[in-house]
Length: 114
Length: 113
Image 1 (cartoon, rainbow over the protein chains, first blue to last red):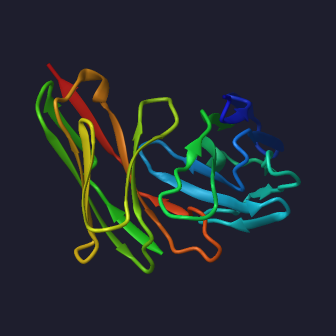
Image 2: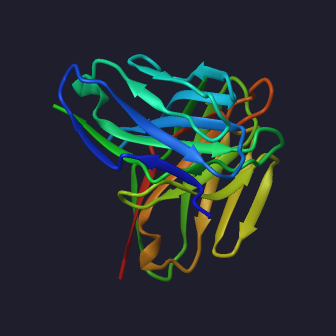
């Protein structure tokens, strides 16, 4: 069972370039999330989605865009990359309703903007 | 919003017991999670508390007091592989369900011989 898969694992971008981090899950979860984690810090929510066609901003959405055309996929788009976007990015998913629903994380994408 | 506070780092001895505390101030509370994160890896789920009291799961236990805005993670019979960062996360009340989690900065635990 693949769980949450995100690509690429590592990427170096130049300032001003754009790229998309891909995320897919095979657990039929309706909720998906993108977090970023800076060194020595906790995870901060960028965007989340409660189902196909529905997305909403998290704590730190500036400089990012998302789309959710299918249940399985939740790509994160970086437009005009900046050094402040150097971070580790985690995609995650969960079932929607009920208490105690565990969030499952992908393995992370290490992004450096130079 | 949420404000979550946990110690930055702790050191303990193999075979011992360690308690990692987490305090939170919240505008809405719908559960508290503990995650373990090894260096360079994704966080993995350890425990979940929504009601007051102790939840035990093998060597790991988690406690919650909602009135005090306080939780702890207790690790028994420490092993070297327990060296990791432990993240406390609080779940917001989100319309329609879901898990909008706010994470603390994590406690880096080092287990020594």
